[in-house]
Image (cartoon, rainbow, N blue to C red; front, side):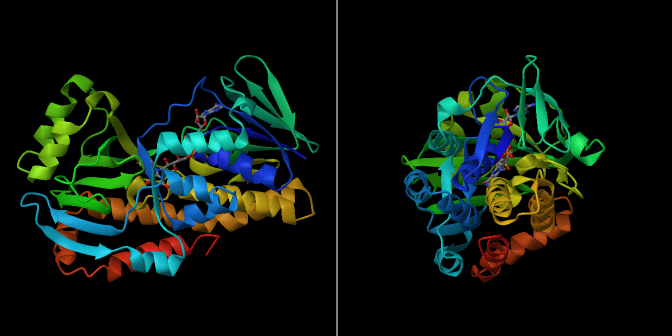
Length: 385
Ligand code: FAD
């Protein structure tokens, strides 16, 4: 059986690796000539780590990962800790460590595992057609590719989603802008083994360790969509948005490199009611775009990949039947993740200021128990337990 995979991002590459390990032939088609991941890093939580472990990537993933042993929230202005607790209970309960990794490292690991030279770069799919026998993908350069089924892992702006759903899906602006990048670890900003977050005014500044003695950092600011982006004013813009915030935040703004700092307007999509039409299945952000507020978009794509390969390998009633079973196993799980992230997003970013103020108060008495319980529920709700 031959599977056409569209998109060589986290979802497409995880799917291609999982499918090949399950004995399927795959061809991966990617629109861009060279992968330049949008975003500096990603936290792969234990549900995602377990999926990558199942793809034989346990050791390389561990080598890319920072040691994130603690979690802390700090008050924006005074810099005083609101709460600090160990992540060990999460590791014990889920059976895996969280893996904050640079996106470039993660993407390279996936490409190299599959075989970088096997990916057909520079091939932008425009549409697909299917019969009862197979699927053909058509590309902008006039070429085409045929397989028994097609996995559309072409991201949040998926061109194949509309044909699967029978309607167009508009993305929803979540109300805030995220800046993210990497800097060398500086313990005057945050401890090297901690996920540190400064919160106030519906904004946040966060740092996570990744391999290579680096911090992944991000800033969130509630703002209207569509403001001009200008790297030459990036540092001054952040200084303005975070005026009066604690010294470590000012130090981070001074140290970041505006040329490698990304700016993203955060969107999600309403949970879809289907991922599959016949021999075509959506996977990853094409199927479920989520705000990054619980760090689960990429992890969900990894879950999709493992479930897809497992479902195809373990059922015998044909491609269309197996894809419907994949859909059945993924719809509710990904709906929950999208809606949970949206809820978290609104509290974190001051959509209802009273709720956000109450959350800041709650953090002062947080032992870690409530936060970790929520994280463990999210993680353990995945297909790997
Ligand atoms: P993408 O990564 O978008 O890949 C799609 C690929 O398809 C791209 O390479 C694209 O070039 C290609 N493509 C597009 N159109 C076509 C076409 N027509 N033909 C051929 N190829 C095409 N997730 C986590 O798990 N943890 C986190 O901590 C986390 N943090 C995040 C922080 C931010 C700021 C953001 C924005 C997201 C974050 N996410 C996180 C979510 C995560 O980045 C995404 O869920 C994940 O990258 C989705 O992977 P994907 O392969 O489905 O899509």
